[in-house]
Image 1 (cartoon, rainbow, N blue to C red):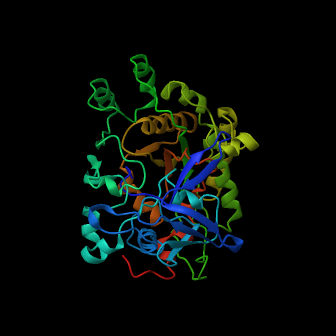
Image 2: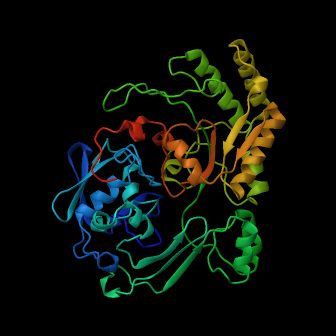
Image 3: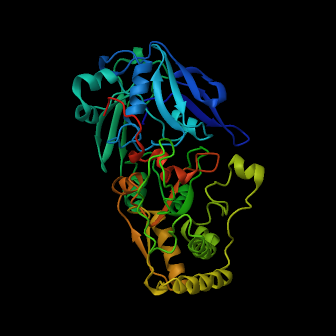
Length: 433
């Protein structure tokens, strides 16, 4: 949020790799009985930018509910929806209740700046000016004000002029200009010519720059690279209302089956296992990432997480191309016996427009082509244009991305599949858009 908007809590990782929460906009919080809700007590006197008044519980509740597609169908927030997060209610001027549906260990991350939190905007500005105006005039309560945000170009922020209203630390840098530069070589050039002072660079570029005197920012975030199969939308009823769900299952894909089709699902597991066992993680680490990183087998857990520290890296399938080929041949026989043609299968991987993710996806796809003779197409559209297909449950290819290493726990991607987070699962929509 570039410190324009602020979250309820500040998150940090302790020496044991455990995520801890600290006060921010919320001075304190209290869990309800049976973890049904959390009540947050807000700081008093926090002021919005440009004279839009004091931040209150009504602003917090409105910001969260308006950004949640489960409650507001047209919402396009990048963090919400999460299965754990329900409706927020203002309980007086400075207390807001977050209702859980039910509570999950990941739910509080949405309230913390440790990941992608929900920022708070002034509801009065929306009431007086409407949604379109709010999109063009980003307002918050942080030490910086938004100057300009042009998608896929740049974000410019400046220290708010009314520094007396900064309740947190007064910024020591007045202006920030965040540039979106897709080409890695251009980002390196900007750093080397001092046109940029901080950059998100490809891992393979680190050694040469470190030799020139650059250094890594000392944080604990570690991104993991995930391969996730999409399309198995197995729920037949909306979990809360019990209403029937009409899900589009493309069973022409070898990883998609009807839930009660045991034979298909047994065959689909062989497909997934064979392909994952054919991913040369160490080879990719050495060739694409210059050896900077670590191989992790356990799905959706990063290398220094409390999860792996406690239980060890004992899930997942190690690299074994010979065994992978045996399992794949078993899959092909079963797939063909069910009336399908293995030679017609094509894998489509979404991985984003550029960078190391594309290199890894291309390396994995080339390996699958070599071992199994299965072609792999790389979808390079930006995440902003791809994301709607995840929200409306039409995505059905492989989802390949590096993400979410800041979460010291397994990352439950079921949030993208369950009807708890689908816009079609609306039970009661708020009056805000």
